[in-house]
Length: 154
Image (cartoon, rainbow, N blue to C red; front, top):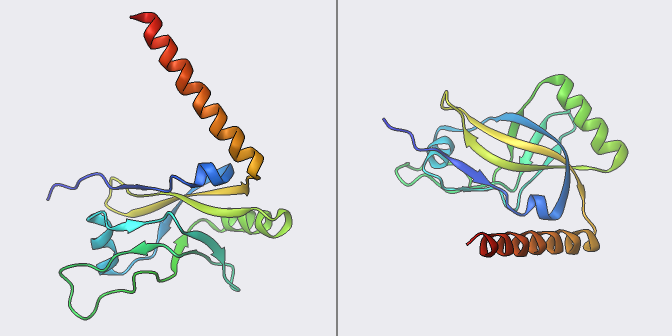
């Protein structure tokens, strides 16, 4: 079986948040969920991460479409899914979230070389409206500069 490269990104995360630190976490999935992800039928654009009362990290609002070839044992598309990380990393993240009011956002959902589903999450701080305007301005300036350089070289 030839496995195509699955790389589902959260494009809004870099625009909405200032990313402070990134981590790679495993995900607890059911059989039909991993099959749907391998088909590329997942979305993390509206999702976020939260700790439960036992100190476990869950990704909330992650959309994994139902598997097309499954019977009535299919999964729920927007179920909470547990993230697997080292205890030290979880303690550090929980401390940051509770003390400084940061949030944890998923950046990318991918399948590693061993065939396991992984999620890249980031500790993030929300941007204010003027920060977002600054980001748009910087992006436009870079685009114009690249256009000028290209025309100058030709």
